Length: 318
Image 1: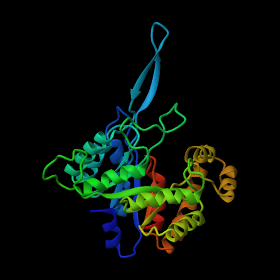
Image 2: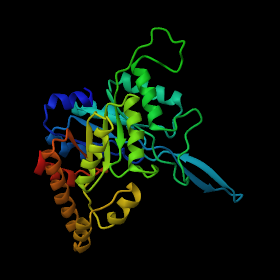
Image 3: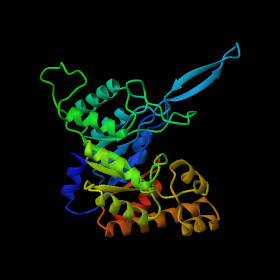
Image 4: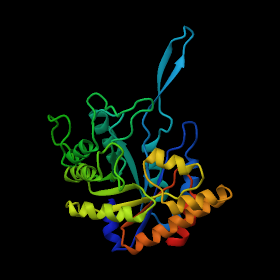
């Protein structure tokens, strides 16, 4: 079932969902199940599975020269989605990236998903490869998520890259895209970023999932700006509970979001990370309650592969 259909079926009730990471190469899928199992009592209608693009490593050879090696440290997104749908009978939503894919790669990836009965995707540009300052698309790949959305929408209209195909079958993907209440790092302003977001919607995206935020007012302001620009699709808030003192620096640096001063003071004054984890849970619970009161369609939690604090939050909310 499509995400938009789940939302419509809920009749105004806020749904629970979360995002997981594929395990590191060499680990088995049981680590995924161990994190999902405790969360199933809260009846998530869908689960997001991230996709991690290749990385470059440089190894010194005997002659002293460096050899560039391409590695993929977290493979398995498609297989994990298939396993989730088979094991839990809920919809799994793979992320699909511009980075690392040609248009042909993307089409074949989408065909595989369609054959597996996967109805939803989240279309993202993706980050630059480590050791590169700026995002570089593949040759004959997409530069922007809006272009990726167009390709998926075309497949939904049975428009393939090979225009000589006869009697081609249309796919039926529900397309999610990312929104940034505090703007994407590369956007010159929030207003311009919302124009880029609007383009993704016009190209066929069906719903928006936001980057994490810790101040609900930023989400409310973002939604208002989107609505004023004519964006009418569901806007799902993304939340993450802070869990360690190190995250005071890591989260703003990695995700380019601000932390409220009140939260910062509480974390700094905590005696250890156990206390920080509880502060993060309580903060996220209060965020969740306010968002539910405001009528958000879904609360989407970034678990980062760890379920315990999400379970604590969900017990207080759902």
